[in-house]
Length: 330
Image 1: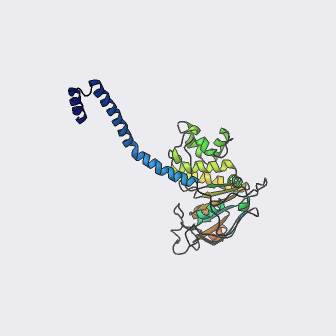
Image 2: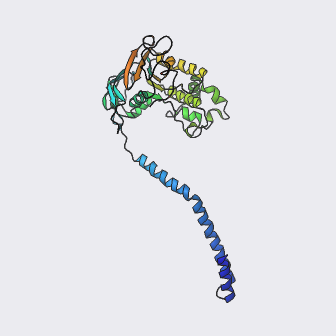
Image 3: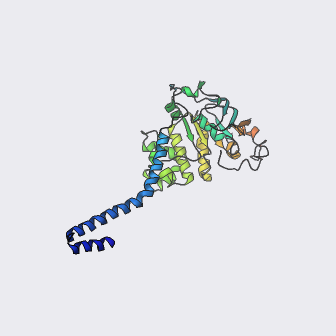
């Protein structure tokens, strides 16, 4: 209003023409609109700048474990050995794993049992080459794990984490991830093996249904089933499952467990990481990890009591607490 009043006075005095005043007012309105739009998006722009800095910082990071190996044998058996393995996270003095020795043979299903925080997931991360042990050795068919090509290990060692990572793509793309040449028939067969085919076919677009970011369109149990189907489709020599049934319903759990036992029977080495003694009882061998150390090891009938609880769990993870338990692990 002030600009219009002052402009009117200039027009009355003959200093400015009416056309010049109208043109100025129109330009002023357009400029104001642009400023308002910029102010509206300024908070979003600020967040984007901060996020981009974190993204580039992540991309510039050097890997902790350099993929320097060259071995890629055609006749890998899948015999995994951990020899006196110690591990501490950077900046922490207390070791998470303390002299762990473990053997996983081809055709064997081993259950790694322990309370939350025992070091189970850390052990899986070492086998996956996400970290390098502080001391000790990891051997695969008698050769140090770092001697193998990283891409080769990714094909031969399949890990199903407790919280599966799915992409904002179709179910077919998620199950066949890393195996671009997989046909629809192969993907469907893998989904049937874990009971995922039934819920997939009920979706509006079936296997072409987009699952959303991180699989947000699916339930926790459905995400786990898709991740297990992906691992089985890869046909690895070593299959590692970290609390893989924590979100599955009873029927799906039974079907998945049957497939896992069958995978071991077909010559693969299978490691089931769990906090449930009832699941561990179905393995051929049970390894109890507590406080970063192997406390017990042997056949289920020797390590587990008939009631499904550990023989010697200690006071902090006493029978009645250590099992029937929780799904997580530190």
